[in-house]
Length: 597
Image (cartoon, rainbow, N blue to C red; front, side, top):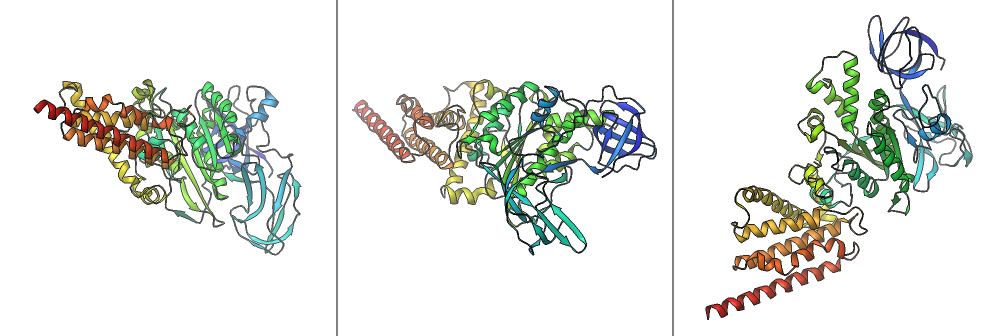
């Protein structure tokens, strides 16, 4: 498409540039700004001027420089080479840029988003005469040892196959299939472009009735998330948002991980970039990067690119969803993205809403989270996007606008607690402030795939924790010694749940990931101990006597001592609980009889 000068710069305010002159621009059109051809996007059109937000540093830009129309919206290139790559907020490959410009991205750096010279082994799946519809898989490429890349007919294109190449090694720009639709002819390559702000089409939405299994007990058992669902992890500085997302990225049963580092500190993004390539995929003992895409946009990068980064991430996720994969998107953090919105809005002199955020903050958040979902794709396969957004409220204040508006569009809320984090309780998810609205949707799956009473056990565990929360308020006032033994037992059982079930060691081989069936048996053992101890307390045996046997500590340590693949060991643990407590009953009863005699 030819590029012609359409306007000149009239005013510059940070990333916001005002353009005047002959400018038949379109809303959301991508433009090239200034002599260095910085990438920008049209965000407002007035009668006599156009407003452009620039995705690069505008220092040195001057009035009078040209603004060039491209005639197309801000798009990303979709094709082999995405997986395992590291991009910035507008899909520029950072590794390739570093080789060209050094550690800092040079302004106006234009590179192929995907390597156009690399040859891929292509297996063609269609033949001449086949009728192709949008979404039809025409070829397969082994993108990484962990991911088969399915080349699909782009949305909006259909016709009859006229020509097709043989299986072989080709670059992504090589036409593989030529299709005709009347007089229209389309040459399909391995790559096509898609506007980041427009959701990719699918056939229909499906119910979210299957969990995203993470191996984290507090999530899987108490606050589960569905595949195709949306969750938020809010927490102040140092509460473990990034570490929790790392665990979810490594252990969740999603096929593809898209990690968007949106406006986080440079050292934190560096840690992600260094850690992810070292992580080993537990599925096949290969590097986790073989099914991961990283989008890095640090806090010192231009704010406009930060605003675009989550749309870039979700568009890449939709592309792999359309192949029939289950994709998990980690957005870290949406608060920094909202701050970018606020800064751009301020420079546009828009009327601010609560805490200076723009009035359209809720609608922008909804646009992002609504792109999650379990769907039937255009090629009749099933794919999903699960969005897990970290929120960084200033001072850990969950009443601030970003957290409150996010809660409107998600159904799973994992509230991180600073006090838990400071006591080394990982994950620091507060069980009284967190919730999941997917529980009822997932009830049938859990009861069918683990045990018929899984949800019943979960609800009892939750009730004990709620009772503990109420009792702790009383303990603060009068101390625990005055409580009756029934309530002391609740506190002791809740301690076992907190330390032995909710607390998890990310660096312990047996505890970093726990299958759901083991989670069920752990809950079952805790409740068996609680019920048997309650019978003894009802007979007048003090909790202190039961505690001295060490059986509570034995149940706490079961997470380390019982391997993840040995469920029979829980039968031995349950037998041990029975024998120890029945021994107490006999000893205590005999002592009481002798005392009365």
